[in-house]
Image (cartoon, rainbow, N blue to C red; front, side):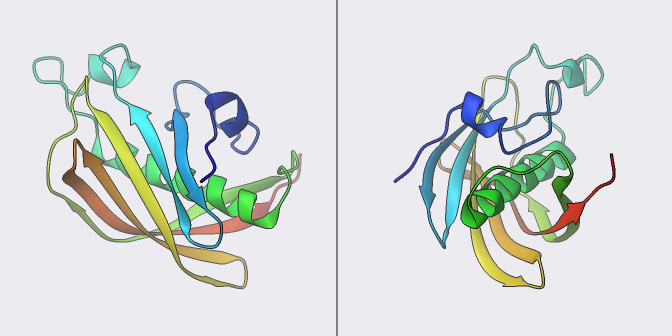
Length: 149
C-alpha cells in the first residue's frame, strides 16, 4: 500500500495553509480509494471563531477534507501531476451526515472509495472517523476542470 507525505500531497493539490486539509495519505489502493489523515489542532485559525468557548471543527471543512482526498486519488489514478491549469473541483455532496463532533486534538481519518467514474466526474463514498468512531459520511462528487490563467 502506497503512502504520501505532505511534500507529495502539495504536488497534487493547489490548496495551501490554512486551507490544505489533509496531512498525510496513509494508504492508497489503485482503482479502489485511499485513506488520509487530518490532524486537528487548536492552532488552526478557524477556532478563533468556531467556537471560542467550545472549539468544534466545522462539518463543511470535514467535507472539504474529503473532497481534497478524492482529488489526490483522482490525479494519482490518471498518472502524473496536474498542470497549473488543471483542478478537480467539488461538484456535489450527497447524503452528508454528521455523527460525532471533531475537536482539537483529534486525528480525523478520511476514507474515500470510488463508486463510479463517468465523463470526468468521479463519485466517491467517504467516511470520517476519530479513534474508530464514525464522525461523518457522505457521497462526494468531483470533476476535472481546466482553468484559464
